[in-house]
Image 1: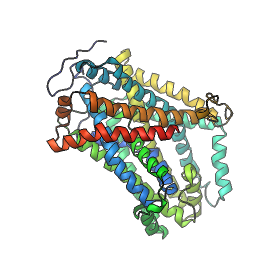
Image 2: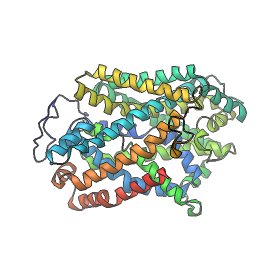
Image 3: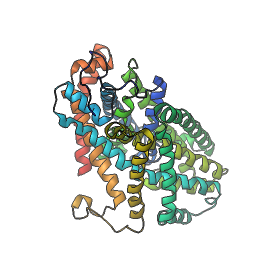
Image 4: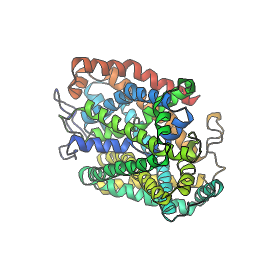
Length: 468
């Protein structure tokens, strides 16, 4: 398929067909992008890494990193997507051709699409855990259980490949049904229901947490900085999470940006998405920590916080089954909106590059993710001793599940984000950037200089630290 590479002074590159779907409004894009950003990282990871790193000081550093690293890169990714008006790979290729840059820059899009594909393959497995726990909580199975019994329930789930496959399949089916329906009938309609539902559920759980008698303790823990508890590793963790929580480096914002109509401010929408994503993360902390403190548990309980610590707490509290069920439904909503966004870049590329219709491209991409997810499932039980790259020191002891997580979080995402910052900040036409962003002179200079100088260094530091 060939594309014309001429462009108007302010418009998207020609060749981005008018028949492509577009978001109906700024709100639709904000909900979709927020749905992508709000996922297991907010509800699951943010609370436990905040707990591990001392609370308030970590939160403050995290907020500064969102502003200085997350928002500039998000603006750049959305800008590239709208400027190219195609899938991430083809948008980068078209922009490179138009600005007479080396065609190898399209590899930035390839890295992002590959990262999203690999992440979804094991993210779907974790999403399946949440689906499974809705039934577990609703049945009252958690009520009155000891810590050992709760741990045994989770271990039993991980050791059963058949059950894991069932819930992995259910979760992938939920994602594929939405993506197959396209931008307006699928993505936009789904997030217009799921995102308000997620906020309502989250507020209900926060309301429940306020009745525990430990809400004030949670507020102090989250918002009262104690810098004596913050380490260098904590600062770098905050920087890394600020980058990853916004779905950067996965080509998602480029894909979603390609459906963004002209005239909608990229800066305002990016800031709105970042603010909403951060609000959800903080609300998750306010929902979880009062329950943790009320039961005398440690806030830094690690990855087991959601599937072991909290189920134990819900099992000991009045109306615990009801609110435990609501919490895991909330977790499904968060994972579902993220799963939709992770599948979209590959589906968009298959539509363009292979000439497949929306349904066939979704089936092909979704089936490939589902198949790779089976390897992650087996690595939790039958293949738990299989370490494909164990001969290398940095991958020693890593199962397939661990390896996919490590490769994406520590290599592909920071590499993709770094290259986006370098491409937009140092190689794209400055005039094109100004036209797409339509910022004031001072606003543009602030974004441009941050993206060119501070952001790449910050991401590079995280990249090197993670590899170490």
